[in-house]
Image (tube, rainbow, N blue to C red; front, side, top):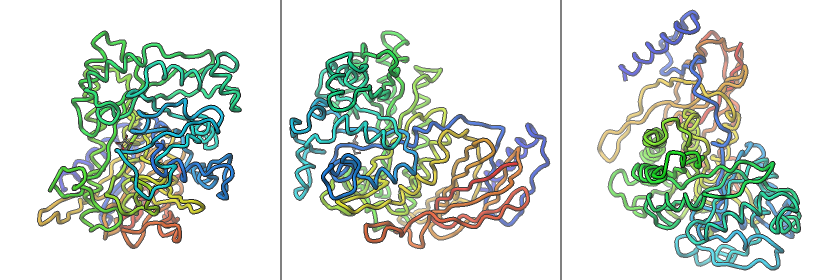
Length: 552
Ligand code: AHR
């Protein structure tokens, strides 16, 4: 700890003298921690798309979550849940991924277009079966919500659609046709006419296309090399249209720390020449924090923990798992450099979040639905901070999943709706979008906790900062379940004129919002007096904080 502090003191001093020649900021001895923003060390623009979402046609996500139907008593906009649209507008959603997930590789896009009364019903399942009490719409897809409805949903939100194509069970031709349906100009093709007949004369201009999903598993069980061959074939001659977007293809990438997948895929894809790199916009990375067994097992089922009933040790263990994200980003990035040293290909973290064992759903018929608590709000803040710190590497991030599923921002059932702590964190962080990320040092004593009789540690404060003209946004997580943390804040290269703070926390680390208690965890303004060149803010225990600073 001492060493890290000394090191930080030295680096900070060096940065101040080197570039700004500003008078050294004085740090009082009292506060336990420091945040130092280096305005002379920009890291890159934070792509708004890292604040993206994922909505799979899985259980209650689409039917009940997003789609309630035009004739529903639930307030809706052309069948789409109105309250969801209104809440999402507050978080400036940049992009939404659909229809999966694993579902994407069993989906025929044609089933979801054309006259609604002629659309077929198809079996829908996730991992083999649905919950016995689930409504028919979960198990037998009515296809009422297809491409048109999804694009309309995105338009209502002001978000870009990101479609995941079926590589496992549809031929490559169907990718061409889906692109044609979405993007061919009005009146140009039979599919453009079909689109117009549905009320959408103008092309959808969908730019982002996922080429399969988890192709190492549910998406076809390929080896990385086999998948690379398929990727080349599927993307070889996909049409683009005059005035339409240049297509950005996302390759199915690694799970977790599967470096072999990244290496194997890139090795094979470039076998015929390095130019293949230019046909890949992004490499998808999926990472779920699920193993709360404290090292006892790696079994996918046995290792999971409970979403709501947990000990402080489980709080830290989950955050520790989530904190791995940064090393996954830098690790895969390093492997990617072996084949793509200029880093033309970016990382697309299009599935992330905690994954708990079943049993905490507000709507028990919703497979994979879990109850996000304050812990998941903190986890999500920490993950978004991680993305903010890696703006040159991460181009898209999609939290899994938007509603009625894993790390959901919202829960809904029939006419009931609630924003979870995760949703509130997205609202707090929205202002980072498009900002210039700044290198920021967070320095605080580590937290020590007991892990089944053994010592374990976790960092005491971390976060990110971004600059927007004269406004600096700092977001930070205090993971300590018990103690608040006073930290001095210094901005190297500018004076802080004024500031305000918003905090998400609760007295109980298990706190969560339900249909009946919608406001158990909500962001609240906090006192933040800006005095001197290094004001102090006290980060409450178990909290996510947003500081907005006006710089002189
Ligand atoms: O998000 C739930 C599932 O997790 C998705 O269907 C799949 O891509 C991943 O394994």
